[in-house]
Image (cartoon, rainbow over all chains, first blue to last red; front, side):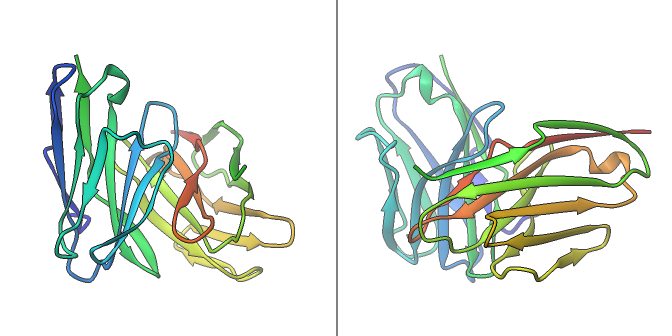
Length: 111
Length: 110
């Protein structure tokens, strides 16, 4: 148990559908990141929250991606009108200024 | 453009060997450097480094940062088959984000 839970673990969706992923860090994690990882690559930054404020968002994120952390606890990442190129592992990391712990990730497959 | 480069890309050693993994970086406003171990799932946190020359140690793993030469090394002594994994380096750039390298794939043979 890493202290960061992600749900679902796997998601298969048809192209054009919307998907939403959830991340639940522990209460001490005031900082929260979303990353995307494809095979053979390191995680790629998507967005960062400090408490409920979204303070940074990658330019790589298109308008189809949105993330929220409404009460500074759990966070959601939504992808609208999914494309095959969105297939990847979506990782959430929670932490403090002393380090960041990843959840087990959500593997998205767009068919 | 910010970048993080890890070397070697892959490494095969025998149990008991010592390995040194490298992470070099060019980023704006360096904040800290993180090392992670990734097996078949999400990365597991190893170290956070913020100051030059101060070694962080955990069992057989140790790491040090050189902010003048812009690199870090991760050492693993007396390697075991359980050390086989991808080792990722991430560098904090700018205000909040971390940029990851592509990792070093380590395989330890029995």
